[in-house]
Each structure stands twice: as C-alpha cells, then as structure tokens.
Length: 143
Image 1 (cartoon, rainbow, N blue to C red):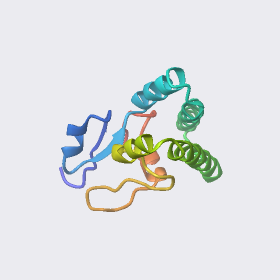
Image 2: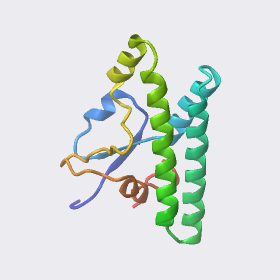
Image 3: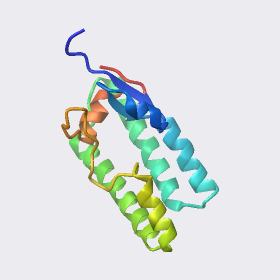
Image 4: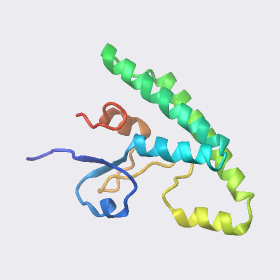
C-alpha cells in the first residue's frame, strides 16, 4: 500500500518508540490515569487542571465530529494556551524543588516544553492541530 499513513496509539512503553515508518500518538486514557494518580496521591493541582482540560477538549472534539464540523481555530487556540499555561506552571513549580527532583524531571525526557511538537520520521514538525485532525475519538485513529 502506497502513501498510507500509519499512526500507532500506545502508552509510554519504550519499545513502541522503536517502530519505524509510523507516527506515534500517546493514549489519552493512559494520560488520564497518570493525571488521576498525580492529583490523588501527590496532590498535584496542576494534574487536576490538565485532566479537566483534556476531558473538555475531547468532549468538544467529539461534539464537533458528531455535528460534522471542525473545532474553531479560536477554540483550538484557547485549548493550546491553557495547555501551555498548565505546563509552564508545573515546570516552574518543579524547577523550584530541590536539585534531585529537577534533575529527575530533566532525565525523564518525555515531557515536552510548552510549544514543542513531536516530529514524524522524516523530521517534519507536527502541530497539535495536525495531530488532532489525524485522531478520532480521543485516542482512536481515523483517517
């Protein structure tokens, strides 16, 4: 099959990163579980904010899909601004923690700075919008 785009939706399990010739999307259900644990166990208020934003964005995308329309650029921009603000708040908090915590955060490497986007295999930068367009109901892939 020529010109077929394959997107693999998965959790953060490292071996999936070795798959070649595909785009990767991370499963929102896994994100929500991780955020829930951070909110309940670690009492991270930012995790609760991100959880709420993720659910609202998913709900808005599902409603738009049901109505056969796309999300307005204004709503997408609002979601992105809120997302970046929550990340910025979290990074500032954790960077102010003792060096061992800040060092561990940097070693994680999976967390992206606000405004950074993943690349596909050819090195082309993907925007949140291009990723959102390629995903179906918040984790399922449709094309």
